[in-house]
Length: 462
Image 1 (tube, rainbow, N blue to C red):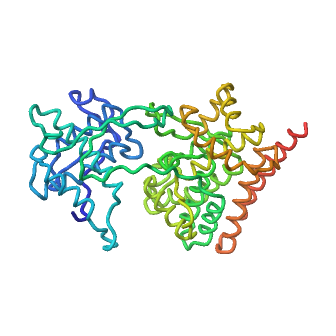
Image 2: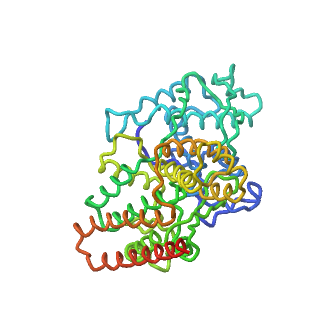
Image 3: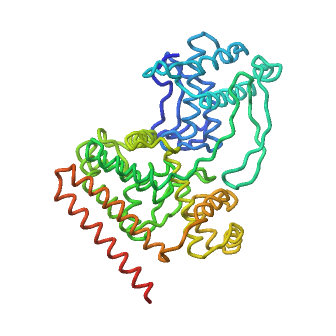
């Protein structure tokens, strides 16, 4: 296989399924799979339709359904090139496909493999599920099974549910030639040192002013919201503006049963001022010069070239650039590690504030105090205390030698925000010619921080 044009397209905002397929329901952002010659791949699209009917995510231009489409593209392209129909696939065919996926080289780095074993395992899992779907709709086909055309088996295994924290039974199709799942290693929270190095790298990188500010705001939102990358990518200008009135930022909550679930995360006015400055002085200018203010879609993160919403994968690419520039190779720093840091810090703050002596004390408090329990789950986006167990352990581990030096936790957040922003502005003043504009923004940020700190200290004195 060589790198070729993608084999899918995404339905538009006004798309609706016909009555016989989906009762006329809205069907925007549903991937449609094609053969390499441009004809419709009907069986693959029926499989995607089954996922649509089950409510699989289509967020961010396709969601889970898009992941399925991308994984199935490998099978579709291989079958087309080798002139084999899905229903005629044999065990030898499947082994050849897996071997091709494992051995294919990267176009830009010919000495490197195009994908890891874990990626191949994920792709093959989707392919086997699709072939099982096909097998179940054609009586007597016997495409998949211990004695089928493809010698795969269904295995039962236990996993811990991310939604409920409980152990549940799952089934999965496995084949002996597909690399086995390795036990996933839990990521650790990103360290303060790494976070600081990322900000410093962004300040000195030779990037367009808009791109530099966008990267800064991306890092800041990851740090203060604990949002997953898809959640951060879906933040809107309106969300930010509303947060200046409520003190809480509305965030789309992924991995929830409801398709449109949200949570509200407390944020400081200092950070909100900085984000609003980005919107006014950088984002608005790009929108005006590209799609026009009248066609503004409202998403916070946009492309510098087109003004369209930023692709979710671009956030990962931007982070990779910053990580390389910062020279972070002593820890597993990634976008999701910010989420681990955020949730761990929630529990660290609770430990400091209420002087919990051990993990059992904190668990009892969470289970017995309904308001506290609901707040923690709302901020983190979890649906059960059990799923937060790992973070409780991390928090006590981090606090084992901690001496509390401040009681006003909200004041600490304001100070931390201000220090981060001042460090960033210091770098900008050394490299930028836009001094008046930067000084005006800095003045607003300092004023907001001063106001918040004064109010908090006044309340504490009372």
